Picture: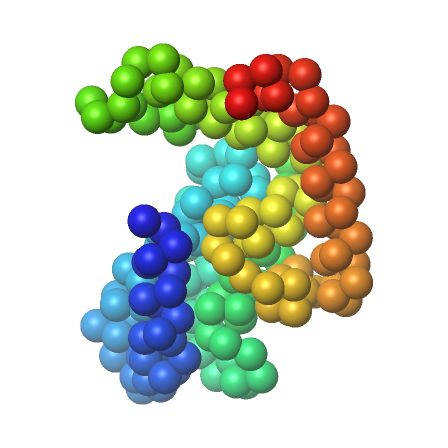
Length: 194
C-alpha cells in the first residue's frame, strides 16, 4: 500500500510539486494547503520514527512546513522538492533532539489485526513487527533516519545523502552499521518466529 502511494507521488512528482511551490511564492494559501496535505503523513511518520517523541515530531513537522511557506525561494531546484523538504525536516529534528536531555521510549504499538488473518499468523506478524520496531528504536537518530528513508520512503542513497547532509559513502556506512546492529538485536527472538 505504501509503495504504491510513493510511486504515485513520484509520478505526479517534480512538476506538480514545483508548480505548487511557484504558487506558494505568490502567496497562494490553497497551494500551501495542498502541499502540506501531500507531505504531512510521510513527514509525520519519518519524524516520529526519528525523534520517538510525538510532540517533538509534530513541532518539527510544523516548523518544516513553515519554511516552505515563509522561504519558498530557498528551494534552488538542485534536487527534487521532496528531497529538500525531508532535508529541512531532518536537520530540524536533529537540532531538536540535541536540545533534549532525557531518552525517550516508543510506547506505540503499530501492530494492527485484520479479521482475514488467522490468529496464529497474526500473532507471529505482531511479534515480528514489535521486535523490529523495538530494534529500530534502539538505533541512533542518524542510523534510524537512513533505515527509515531507505525502507519506508524508498529513497536511494544519493537522495538520502542530500537529505541528511553527508556524502553517499557515509550513508552507505550508516546503513551497513544499522543492518549489523539490527541483525544482532534480532538474532535470537525474531529468528524463532520466522
